[in-house]
Length: 388
Image (tube, rainbow, N blue to C red; front, top):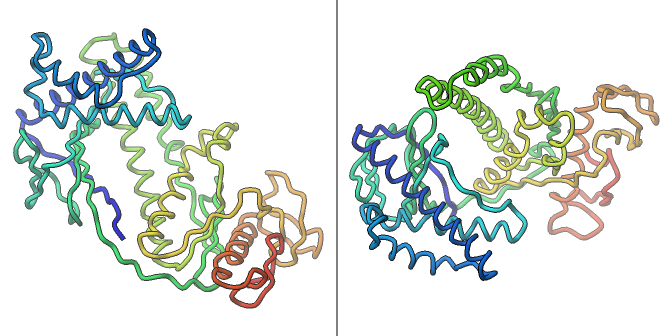
């Protein structure tokens, strides 16, 4: 199976190379803005926008005009990439998956440009066409064949992202009830597992709020256009970048451990976008549920293991896993007494057990008859307590 893997490293460019990076990123941004303006202008005048290939032909014409002859100093592939990205952005807009493409500002911290080919790596150096060899911090081995590279500036410096084609042959997993994990995501505990493990929510944004607030208040007092405002803006950006890196580190380490320790992972198919419209929006975004589920899905696929999301409307919390009684609960009920058997139940642990049992009905029944699962038990989506 061929997959794409991304490897990101921090670059160590010379002063001259860093200057060229800024120049290439600026040219890429200029092409994007010019082509967005052309599409909008043509649509207003004729009701039809130019195609990607028509805009690439216009790019060739622009290189010959006196005002834009400087475009000839930039690799043609670097200039063509924004047009390809713009085509994809408009397609996403027409398919109602994204908003209409907007103009990009040179004041943005994140500046970037891409190479679709011609990139090579030797030891701790990466070769970029027309830029030569650039040193980087090689924190891990690069796998597969390099297909493209993106150079991106963040608050902490320049980074290169290498997209590589990797051939993997995962061994098919054989999940059993003992090697299947059900997980319930929450805000009090980030994760409660069906085997009893609890992972505390790191609350990274909440812990950094005071420092962020002070830095942003300091930024608001700086005069616009001043050197001090520019330095303070970069300081705020570095704080946000550190926060994002810490969250990614937590999610990657946890998802990798869970996938390595189990043959199947069962979780709820949460509507994170819908939950983020509630009064808990800040905490939900801080937790990173959507990214965590995405990581579980692709890491299971890479290792040949099973990731199964159950229906978000399945009453995993209210259904008592032991007796199958459906209880009435409020959000504040962290423990409840089952109306059927009278047992005191931990809300989150009970939900994790139900999620595991509901997932097993599908996972173990694969390839079996429509009415029985792999253990010969009847398939019943609303029945709890059928599996141990």
